[in-house]
Length: 163
Image (tube, rainbow, N blue to C red; front, side):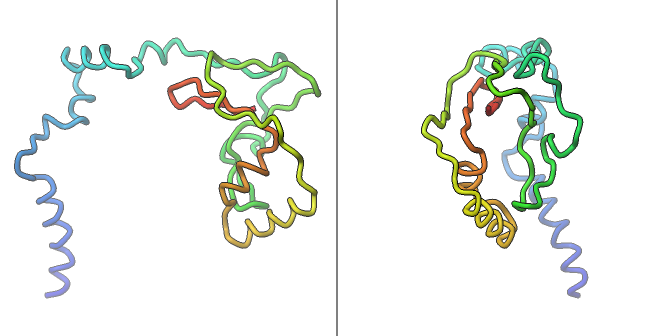
């Protein structure tokens, strides 16, 4: 009997979740975004949501003239960072000291580390060893020490590059 209960239990809960009183599957957000009726198009165009046309015309610029996107996987997003039990969160561009950078569009500065001071090398090594022991890089260590002197800009649409 227990075998039947374990098998029927998930099926029963799935059936109940699909037939909740008062719900209409044609009234769900997923249905409306899949459909192409005029009401949905009008609602999107009169709201603050971005339209497909905005994304079709969006072109991102590289931050430095003449500095290419690196080809080594370790310098690209999601590359493993075993030394701190994490992953790389951006793209590492290599340019000469003093090279001008530019941003892809207007934005609001949401972080500028004007008074950042480099920590002693041994303290950094100790923090990385502790990160390895806990299996992840604690966010305060990542954001306040490992990032170094950083600037972050909010361009909207979840586009927040850091420099």
